[in-house]
Image (cartoon, rainbow, N blue to C red; front, side, top):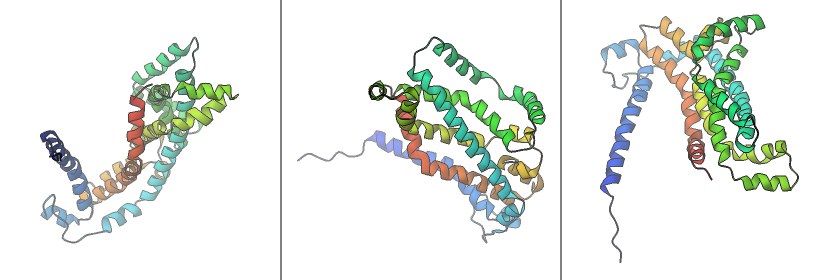
Length: 278
């Protein structure tokens, strides 16, 4: 009979580190949630991590009365439209760069990678002027273009590496069956790239969701502003009422947390698949 092996010291250290990391990353969320349910008097008199004496929902009521749902709808619209166009364009650009051989392949790819080094803040004035001249200023559509443009190079860069890991035998078999390049892309390459697209969707979704500077410069009316500006506005309005601010932060972070919970398996698969070639 073989003796059962016990847990090695390495695994014990890994478990201890995981628990420590859980405490480090979980305490801010714990503080955020319990503070959002405290009254102002309870917050000032009680301890930082002490549970509320009475769970107050009035903070969330103030947030919804301040137009939170409008900010939420605008953020969702910007993220969904930007991600849909961004991922589709990135996939269309990455396919020929990763699967086809032509003379301008490397120069075009190098140019796309080089644009990743351009600071986005130097484009604020040109984008502001362009938005005014095209009539897009102070609309949700003014935010879609910059979000796509500045996240496209990174998305193409990642998708090229991911698509290069797809076996070429599948593409050759499709060509033997009479499929053209576009049919091969939509029926084989694009479906096999779903895990990589999901990874990019989560990554770019978080970036676009938290984007502040473009929303600040290219919008003016409260009816078209996004959630980061809602947090900024509530912070100015309730600067002395920390529980209300915590309620805004809780509601603003909830969609991204839910997105990560339901998409974490695809995120891990996409990262692993893109890391292995052949």
